[in-house]
Length: 294
Image (cartoon, rainbow, N blue to C red; front, side, top):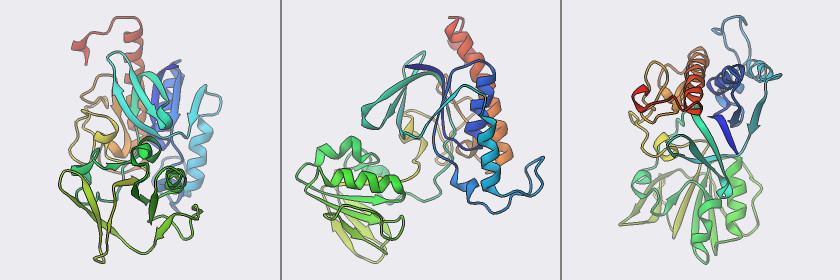
């Protein structure tokens, strides 16, 4: 199925974008869960119209704004986004795919630093989707570093495919893992070591684990891993005043597009991106868009 607009991220930037695009009569799908950065905040004092309000309450108000709009929501994780000319192919878990004429990336940022060697070995033995790549490690030993509930699901699935799975627990106490999974608690992973492929994971304590493959399951990853060829300044996606990126039809809004990391700024950028995307979609679908317009 092809949507007019796909929004990646369900924080203030993503929800603002979705509402504004829907008002412009565009078909919209939003991928993502509630923003933990907002919902876990005890008090917010600088959001206009609310005085002091808890993050959880403000987040509920954001979601209520979507009521009455024909906006589809999905909690499926987006693995990668590919520009295909006049549309984007959005790859989901399990090799599922949807299409959209335009995409707004509003994923927020991952404040945790990469492990040493993570970029070097990405795609060469370090992966961010166990469901996608576990089959490459049948009969082999795998390490999965887990930071969230998704990592538990991925670990349980992967343990049924590989010979041995070690789960490095960065998530919570006593995650519900299959009995055959070895769990490492209280250790901080810092570095992947190897020649052409990673062979060893080193920890801050000096402990080391050898394995054939490594998975890292976080809430989000670097933008260039999500969208090949996207231009960044290392931390953020580079945008212009209309929230356009270097890839035509692709926008970015909110924390992923740079500081300050503020709710007001995120919601405003979501609106800016959606309004420009609505114009772009209309031009593309009426075959009036030219490359010089981007």
